[in-house]
Length: 235
Ligand SMILES: [Fe+2]
Image (cartoon, rainbow, N blue to C red; front, side, top):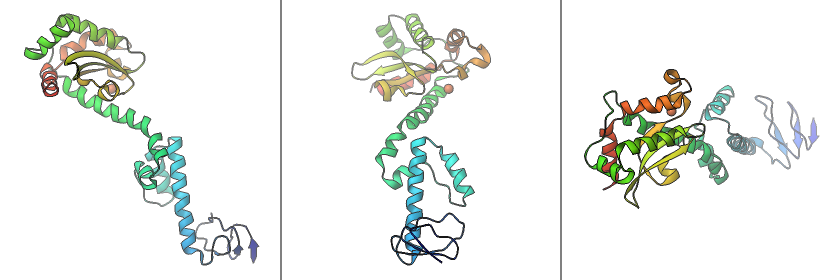
């Protein structure tokens, strides 16, 4: 049977058009439009279709897991999501991924610092150079605590309070960032001490009373770690 300009079905020859077949295992001969001897052309069309689908998924924010699950159902090898942008060399896709990179990358950076900033044997006050710098830039250790506590309590929604170092000015500063925005990438300050004020950081012990969490966290600050970070960035 011969059709013009349509999709092929089993046992048919298609003249013109010759789009990708949907029926599993379908092999067709395509004359005109799609070219003769369809194997190579069919593979190119299938490859193009996959690329377009990945770009559309990336633009819609489809997760790598969701796409990989879909790929596994279709019997295809799963790929990391970033491959879509890299393989296609597509700047639009790479730009579209920036919010996800900022959120997930920032969350990794922030928590990596946070875990080292805390210690069950922490608390008290810093010593030496860091304490002197705190007194110089905030007036006293108590005033610094009050300022970082107030800034952290005041974060709207989820975010972080920070003690950071301004390398251009050679001074310590207190700052707040929203969501998982990383301090250095957002403000240029080098992070020394971060306080996670996402509700997940305190609700099990302090319910929704963020000020109580901020009051208690000073008992577990690892000042040795904060001092090491200060000494490393002021060199
Ligand atoms: Fe957190």
